[in-house]
Length: 272
Image 1 (cartoon, one colour):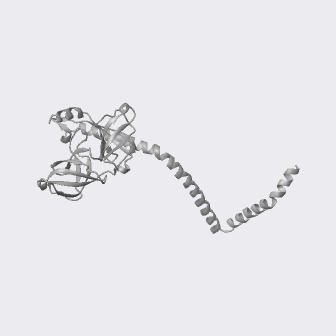
Image 2 (spheres, rainbow, N blue to C red):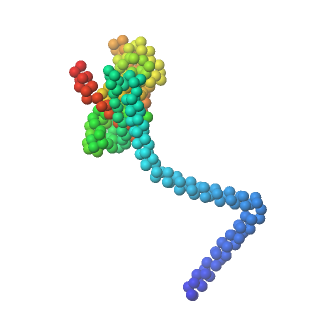
Image 3 (cartoon, rainbow, N blue to C red):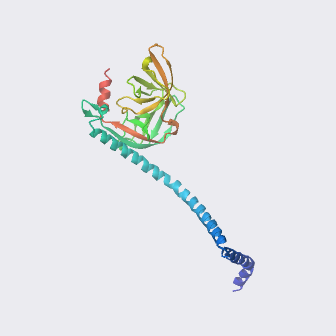
């Protein structure tokens, strides 16, 4: 009892001060309608600020799961599109003698990446147990060429980047039927080359360059955009510099594309 009395004596002054402040605020708040509105507005602002802080924290921790859901949705939509193409008799570019070429899509996350070497690679979190195979095309989530799978373990896969001196793929200027070869000669990872294009192709700055049909890439995948060109040594073709459609340095989530007839096409092509 003595300790309780001592404690009350110690906090009496602060307690009376707080009580007086509360009474003063209540008196002020109820004195006029204007004061009531000001107090209510201030209270709502404080509560909103606190709620915003907690909401932002919650949003941050939900980003991972939402990003995963987004990748799954893109994968699903791509496969639905492939099914629609397979059911359509109007899309002749996907067919060979009336048979529709099937493409299947799956998503993956980039775990490691490099853009400053002569031979640049990135590693993804899918492997043999997920159905990943060598030579599968790798696209950005927006459907732009990023590279292709080189080798796989059970859980992971190594992919060759577009920005690698060993990388090659077929390309053409969109809207024109001139085919060439796309490759990288080193330096800026955003600058790649389209060669073997006839001089009279007359490209324009900003033209889109897309993929041709191959055993890796589906047709019409965006590769990059024309920045400049110059006459080649043979004086009959031009060498075109492209800016890659995807910034490989910021690559985080990707789409894997499996062409069901890739092995047959590769075996046929290797004889020529």
